[in-house]
Length: 337
Image (cartoon, rainbow, N blue to C red; front, side, top):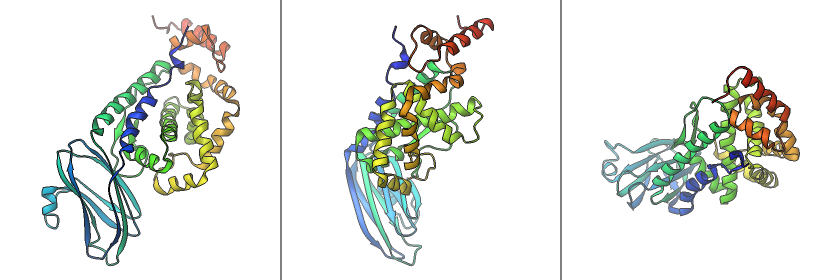
């Protein structure tokens, strides 16, 4: 008998949807100085509707960045209404979906500064990628649904958003992945497979953090325990190699961790060098690691899964615990019909 637990999660398909737009490449770049009291602009010509842009700005001092359509650019110094506005201090990233076909402008504004600013601007675009993101968001919701087939928990909101800053997830109830996280991970790692591996762990980590909180785990450090549970879940779902691949790559290339720490304003994501090494240590005996967690996980498993594990145990199945939980549910008359 085959069990759905061994099928690869749809999250892999989801990551392909999200990363594909990043591969389209750069459509605009700018570097140089902006004098105090001045501003510079870059014109993006004839952008199709629903094009997704990823914009990265770097500077050695504070400036303001604007994204404007053609009409509002013409009145930029007076009553312009930008589609996006943000303050840049060192590094700043945002993404935006083009609302209608036409020309658009990015303005780097140092009018309020007295000193010149060195700036660098990179714009990535992917034609039609808004549809990809919608498809990816649907797959991400199906990921939560698949997780619900295995564990008992109240559904949580899940989706993808443009966050307007370089972080991995919005600080909201549920899981809301920032599109900026995907873009910049790929920029740093420069490898599709490793980007998928890192994103996979990040999403499993967030799911683990939510489950630990809802199931009242007694740990005083949920973040550290979430790393371990995320690893256990990926072992259970045959995704162990993804953790090993990204962990070994980071340990062998510590400069990548340094680059990520400079860009991302997020304590949980992506993995640090220290956390990557801890995960590799945990995976030295992955089946035993997953087995040790069954005492916490089995009471939250769906009854149909427990029945399947009783018939066909995995290397990490605690069979006496599974049988005990099934008897407990039968005795309390909680077994689904």
